[in-house]
Each structure stands twice: as structure tokens, then as C-alpha cells.
Amino acid sequence: MMKDLFPELPVIRGERVVLKPLTQDDAPALQEFVDSRKVYRYVPSFLFENRYDDAHTVIDRLYTECLEDSLILGMFDEAGFGGLAEFYGYRPEFKKISLGGRFAERCWGRGIGTEVAGIMLQYLKENTDIDIITASTMVENIGPGKILEKLGFSLVAHAVEEDWGFDEPVIVNKWML
Image (cartoon, rainbow, N blue to C red; front, side):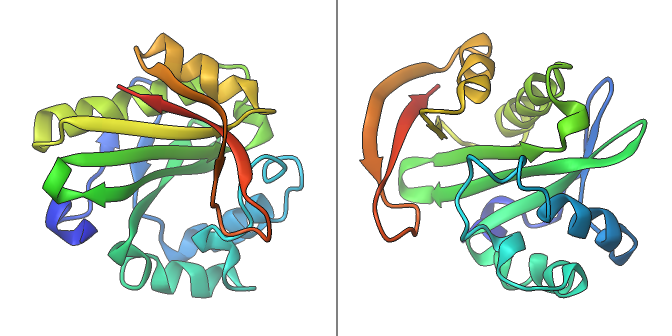
């Protein structure tokens, strides 16, 4: 259970970004973000923030219902809300977890994804006993793969089927640190 790994909701600071729990004040920005077709083109439709039509409801349930399976933090920079960072797939028996993220278009190509993933890794190394860190990326979305390579991840499976909750399996690349 994710609460075992994160008994308190963390605030994780980088040089240009901070990852922190979302509040109801963030609901309008989250709704605009979730409604972006470009942001969600390469990510699965079943993500927690897509389960409810209203961002206020998403935030109400994010740190109760969602925290059973994943920890989603808001990513904020100088311009405000800029995306979501997620720890998911926690397997305590293997000391394993996966990382994910999705960012507003204004954050693309600025190194924000690399910074976010980097501070997530640093947090795990300094505050948990996690040994195995993984990520999955859609083959068509090459940006996240470049980020993972920069951070020392190895591509362990290319273009393999993975069940992401769609009618058909999604073809993904699997990464491991």
C-alpha cells in the first residue's frame, strides 16, 4: 500500500519546481490540464485524474482513494501548476516502484521533466528503501525516453505489450534503473 511508503504526503523541491499535494485551489488549473488533448495524447485514459468529470472531486479523492495505488503530486514552477508527477506500482516485497509524469505544453522542451524525475529519484534514494525503479513509456512518445536515459535508466524491453486498461494492450518501452 502506497501509504506505507509515504506515511506523510511529501513536498519535494528542486531548483525550478516543487512537487506537492494538490489543493482545491488547484482545481481550475487541473481541469484545464486534463482537458488538453495534446497532453493526454500519449497517456492512458484510465489515469486517476480522468475518473471524475470534476477536478474538485478528483482532488477530494486524490489522497484517500487514489493513495491506495499511487501518489500523485502537483508540479509547480514559477508560472504555477504545470503538471502531475506520480509514484505508482509500489511492490514492497521487491522494494520496487514506478515513476510517471505528465506536463503542460508550456513545460515541454525546457528540462522540467528531467528535473522532476531527478528530484523524484533523489527523494526515493534519500527517504525510502526502494531498490528497483521502473517506468513505462509509449513508443510514440520519445521525450520521456530521452529523460529516462539522461537519468541512467536502461531500456529493458522495446515495443512490448502492456495492459494499460484499454480494450487492446498498449505497445510500450519499459525502463529500469
